[in-house]
Length: 473
Image 1 (cartoon, rainbow, N blue to C red):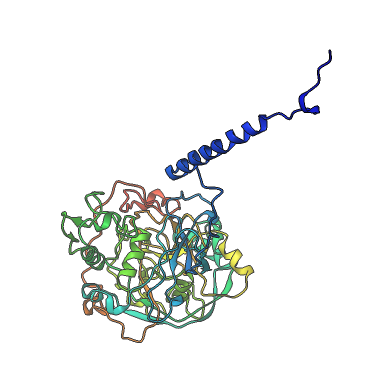
Image 2 (tube, helix red, strand yellow):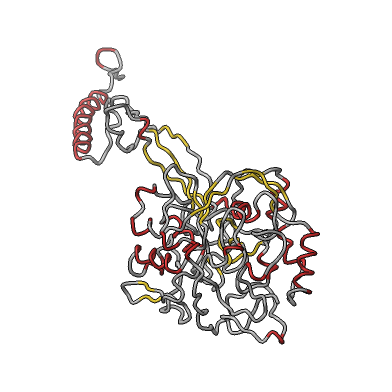
């Protein structure tokens, strides 16, 4: 017997019905779990609609200024001395509206770059000085400022010639019994033309009396590190041979040296004093202009040397040490500046480079040159009581580290012409100086401050403040 399905056709499976019945509640449960997780915050709602992100654009004008990074070592390349800082530009704010707030994330900044020249101070120096208006100078400093003389601007020949150096060496050897070489003057070649604007120059070197008044105006411990972060000068607390006394509260100087040129002052200490009284250090070109005048004289008074017109270590029996500022009126320059030959060598603002004159000459007539942009030493001018006349020529250059405390180095200040009258203390008038010159300070046992030349011949039988003379001659 054969069997066949009931109804005469094949029956369909019911499995898909059961699958559909199971899928719907499963989907509902899964969605419930995901919504719960999103509400808890552990899963981002990627599938939820979001608004298009909006960026709030605020234009903020700032001025970026390049300054020197004082934390870098002295031998760091110039290109790495720049630190860029940004500050809001007040000129960009609308009238009557407060400056824009600092930008936040998402804001767009419009930057206006304002170039700033690299300072011409040492790599670790403070930024270029900003002199205070005369009206802001304390009265205690205004009254101690030296009188000034006007140095007219113009073009002049700076530097020397081989012929002049040859004659200067001959005179050093034959007339002064000194030891001089032409190589000492190689950094003064070649002669080249420069032009400077008119300026004022103090008629006398800054005295101890003036410098002590400056220190007292700065307050206790000012000499230690308050000259742009560097030492200004030493006192007897640091060096027994230093003439300035500091008792913890006040600075004093004995009457015997009060009107002598301050010495042992660092370049930083000289610059800080000048800025404090509303002045500045002269440039090397300005100094030479004031000493040489229009006729290119070799000494401030002319072209013939005279021992009586400058304090050097000649004649051989002359006592060591400086004279009071302005003691030799006949030795003044054509414009009336005293002691520009001898007494103490003077700091100027320029960095020193033995090749600078050659580089400057290649550029043609330089206008108001300020020296190399960087260096390790600063220029000295004028010679001193510790050297032979060779070093006191108006064209001669010397140099020292700006933080040196040398007993034959001082300074004087310059000033740009101003509308107001030049103020000076009556008791500093050079006409009243030079009477009853006191003896030189006690001898020092340190041989740290000699000029870079050889000692005098043994028959000289003389000593200076370093115990034995280390100057040429």
